Image 1 (cartoon, one colour):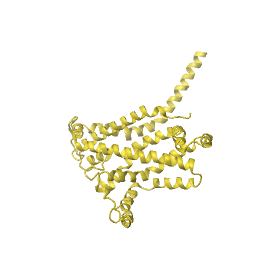
Image 2: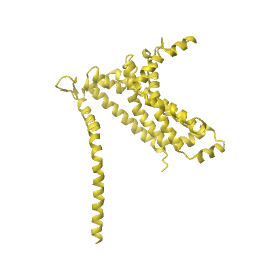
Image 3: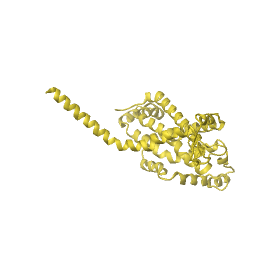
Image 4: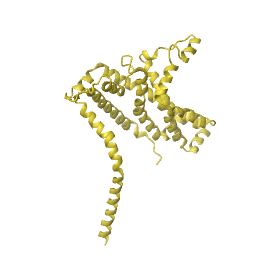
Length: 304
């Protein structure tokens, strides 16, 4: 009797598992069509020379990878990509962390207004934002240039100046991304026990120690999530201002790996090169994520 009961229990369990997997099938199909298949096709194209027009693809093996890795501008673009990552992490991860701490813990009034004001740009198209900032930061006739002119100062022609162009494009991208990251971090900090914070305040713990030794560790689970999506999504967002304003110029000074892959495929029609750049980009991101999980994930605090 006990044997039959055990068999029946296993049958019910397996049936429940099968039902659960069945519910996942539609999502798996969609994921396979829009993620796995494009990835596999990109790997396939990276071994061919094809201009997206000719019906024939010429198999070239690893030549696309060799040409990409032997091109000096590839390393310049990789350097631009890491510079974007550093700037976007500073502006979209560190700064909103500090803002969320100040608004939730230090300031006591108008919190709702601050949250709404910071999140508002998330609703505005980045194309519109890029055009708006191009007008505001116009070095000749923009409002900021006019105000600086009254003070005897000049705005550099940032779209043509190496270094400045990446900084300004990062600021434009951050204008769009900042509010979302801020709200996530604010919610995480707001969820920390008020008793812990008030006890620290009563013990006259300096604000910088309160942030570094209490707030930062106890909200680190959300912080690491924001850290990861900032690396991955911000470079996707920065594609828009690069496309609208600079098209990767001057002389690839504002291009990154994501835009360069687009440029190779849809501007100069070197699909094999574009696919190889895409695979190299994915490999670099996997290395970054592996290092992040290896070095940072250990110190994350999970309440439950």
